[in-house]
Image 1 (cartoon, rainbow, N blue to C red):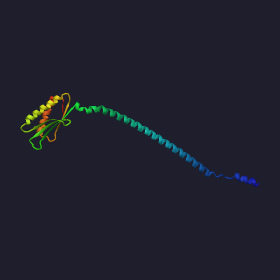
Image 2 (image 1 turned 90 degrees about the vertical axis):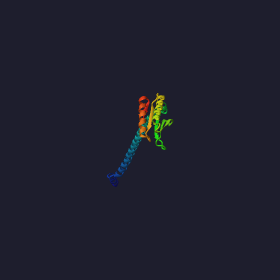
Image 3 (image 1 turned 45 degrees about the horizontal axis):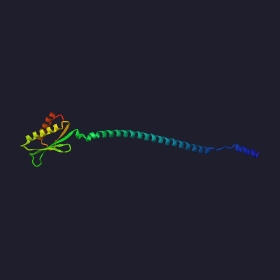
Image 4 (image 1 turned 90 degrees about the horizontal axis):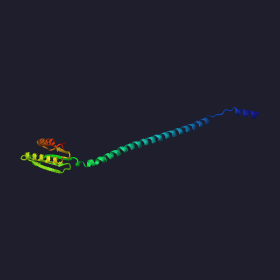
Length: 183
């Protein structure tokens, strides 16, 4: 009977599975965390791929814009380089002589500082020099009648009376010649 009783005791015995359940839950949590990390890594890779594709598309569009701007620049470059063939630029200076305050100089220069005419004004020759200058400027405008002449009057170191006289001459010539533009 002893045998029977020990078998019965063994059958009535309680099994403690708590530690086994703990191990199963730990393994289950490790598996779940690992799959969550893999999903997160895949999501980050997908976002990086999308961001790179968007950056490439954006750079491609910017490249096309720059390419169009370059072709426009190259098309206009010849026009800009040859602008002096289409427009005559000239500067007009009327300055007081530093050594003799009664003497003034009129200098008429082309855009590249090529001196066309220089005249000296003294109190005795003032009237004739202005008429002579007006005639020479009129002949220059006639020679360049096929293109606009952009004339700049430099207003530094100019006497008020010379400024008034130059404006009078230039406005009279602007009325006679439609290719004169005063800046």
